[in-house]
Amino acid sequence: MSETRRPLIAGNWKMNGLADESLRQMQELVSRARKFDNPGCDILICPPTTLLRELARVAVDSPVRVGGQDCHANASGAHTGDIAAEMLKDSGARYCIVGHSERRTDHGEDNTTVKAKAEAAHRAGLIAIVCVGETLAEREGDKTLDVISDQVTNSLPKGATSSNTVVAYEPVWAIGTGKTPTPLDVKAVHAHIREELGKLMNDAAKVRVLYGGSVKGSNAAELMAVENVDGALVGGASLTAEDFWPIVKTGI
Ligand code: PEP
Image 1 (tube, rainbow, N blue to C red):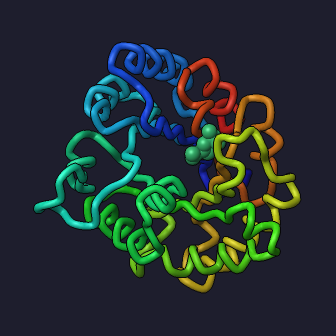
Image 2: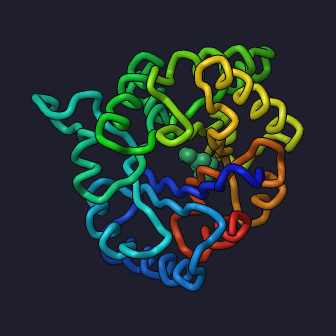
């Protein structure tokens, strides 16, 4: 991890969590984090929207932040079932994930949609975590770097800076599968992302680029040690404080 970029260790709870157990897990995470006056990293939980306000309340005045998992491009309107970035902000969110591969696949979101959502997050004053990553077929077809170039170039809005944007590299084939790329593969893609960011923004060197895909306590330190890896986006292993904490510790 870099000395100039503050790591971000983020948990994506996806569609998991009812109130009682989720509150217990958040309380446990917050109480562990409170033992550090100023942990050396930012800690984030992106719960289901139903839990956002309550978890934000548990985390108040602690180093733990909460965020949304997705937002609509518009601030309000006739969009049944959707959630605006402004609503997430109003519920206590500081960040919003956009373009997660499950959104790209399950909801047919393309780069143009993701870019509009990142723009919406910025408009609401949220930090957008923009996800990119290749499928297995793309990796096997030697297309990884081309896919990443396309996603980075076309998913990031004009006003993206290191203060309002984080990029998460999540190889689709590594999400929830227990498989991870080698540190050398991660290094190559993260270097490529930083190079692409350099073509888009002036402060590319300061943008945090996270790795995501089957990160767990046992592999986090090795992945976080890779050049240009500035933290992690964690799915399954973020659901309990016990599993998430060893990953957070690699950033502290
Ligand atoms: C994710 O979906 O963002 C993710 C990285 O999931 P997992 O850690 O479970 O692979």
